Length: 374
Image 1: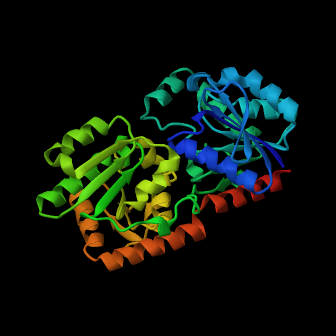
Image 2: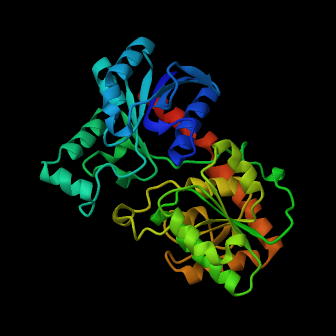
Image 3: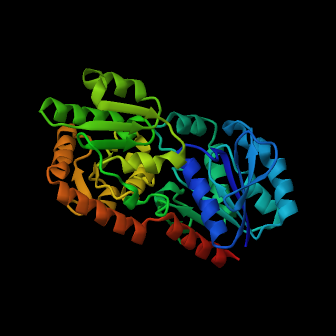
């Protein structure tokens, strides 16, 4: 198939989770033999080849993504793709419009709530204006032949469930190789990776490690990423600054080496600051967990669906009640107390992600869905 994939405002290559997702989908479909053309954010003025697919970078600000509609329309008219895939964003939709105008089958990829809950300011503004954003979201769903999402509740309720395919993200199980891990000197290294946003729980993770340090545990912590909670996390870590390493956001290509130096991965998600995750369920596909697992690390995460079905207590790691920092530090201590058992958990985590949560598997399933559309 010839495929046109629109990821408006998402930098590729990039350090964001969305960047990894768009890159891995484009690369994975190309490896399956398809001609993939990806439109994403970036500075280049000319298309180039990247790992088997053609990349078109656009400088358009994300909030003005619809301004790229003429470019996308002309590209689609030139390529005549068999299908157009678009990563949904409130102020995007150029791919869906081009598909409709040119009569090309389209697939809408949804990774967050299309319509915010009433508690969110953007939703209240939309309601006051008569709901134009809600109607536009629903119209794109109507145009799409299929909708792919980690959780069907991200899609407006009136859309037929039969049109929606639930599909988790994954990890590149070739890029993350547990055999690359080298024995490390010094105390166990706990890693947190991802966005430093409140609902990712980075400050909960720092507090839990501080409690363990104050109780006499010999530990260190590596924090990979950036975001609005970074300054708060650094301030919390100050009393034991030598035990915490803040690397900032790093390129995707460097993450496997960082995880190879870790002993345990934590994903202390806390949905309290994110009303949408409470109202619709945990719809974010937890990329960090999949990559920890692919690297052969045991994982500690909150006991909320679907995280508690990806990581099972005592099998691939440990679970704790969401938002309970004391229970989080106990879960970390529980895993690290027995190094041999922790290693076995990491091995089972690797086996589980290979079997169920790889990008390779994600792209094969996406290929199947696209084939059904044509």
